[in-house]
Image 1 (cartoon, rainbow, N blue to C red):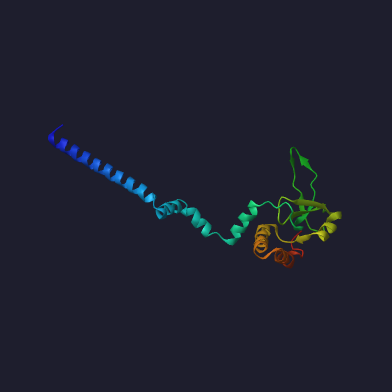
Image 2 (cartoon, helix red, strand yellow):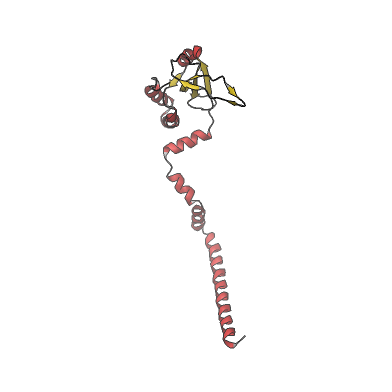
Length: 184
């Protein structure tokens, strides 16, 4: 190694030692600052800032839907979405059964009407036509396109949780109790 290479190595060593000493000083300062309550709180919040922004900007509708999804309703109100009237398909093809066929509500081919509970979508009924009038008389039936079920549920829960049962049911009965004019 020549003289210039030795000098270059010593300069590089001194630079690396200086960086190490600066790093040690910064680490020491970090741990000292961490003992300060305000700095510790800042560090805690900065690690959660994305989640905090997300929650701060969450819509009421999204909040209501998340609330609904976290609480299972085992004793729901007697309010049901009308999901249509169907002709049962009794044909089986191998291991697969063909789907029931949606027909007009008053069709002579109709066998059943399907319903889904407003507060718990796991509660569904397939009512034979002979019992349909009795079922509909004893329950509140929502006539709306199935694509709107989630929006209606969200609005219902929003009113229910902020304004109470009476206003929520009034919203349902005032807007959806009339038969929907689609091919049901």
